Amino acid sequence: MPDRRPQLADAALAVVAQAGLKGLTHRAVDAAAAVAEGTTSNYFRNRAALVDAVVDRLEQLDVELLQSSSPAGPPANVGEVAEQVTGLIFALMEEHATLTRARLAMSLDRPESVTAGHFRLLAGLERTLAGLGIPDAPGRARDVADYCDGLLVHQLTARRAEHPDPASTAGAIRRLLAT
Image (cartoon, rainbow, N blue to C red; front, side, top):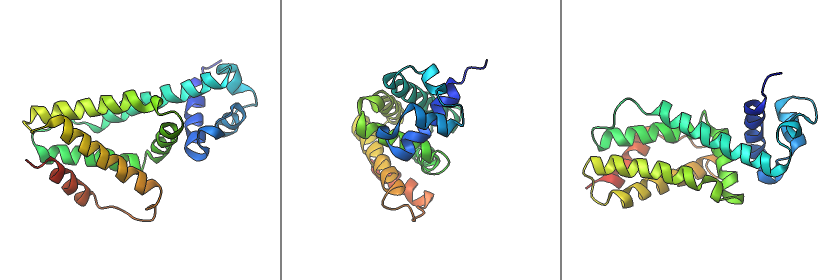
């Protein structure tokens, strides 16, 4: 019998993205995964284990997304940083919107579940900026992260009908990093 944990964790992410953490039930995951009722509870015995599976899968997918969106080698200048960050943000708004919605729902109900990923991303951006000689790399990294988080929240909620321009987004990031 194949291990259905990844399939069930992906379905659980979709449930959280659609219905929030309060909507996460074994039965809802069974339905989203199109598996027999009781399958999810066979793999994740209680709700805490199911929530942990969502957190773990979210973390795994975030790492994979970061690795796939970063070209070989660090960016050579602020313009390349802005382009890379913009590419990641647009991926999170568009093809990975479900992942982003799940992360936002988790961050509202269980903020500690997204803390490690946030600080890992922030530390990587700080190292990149410091390597480029950007003054106050930690502060600038936080500014960029805050801008990007705000953009994601607005685009997935209040501004769903708008289609932001990647060039404008990259320009805003370059301005935040200007020395």
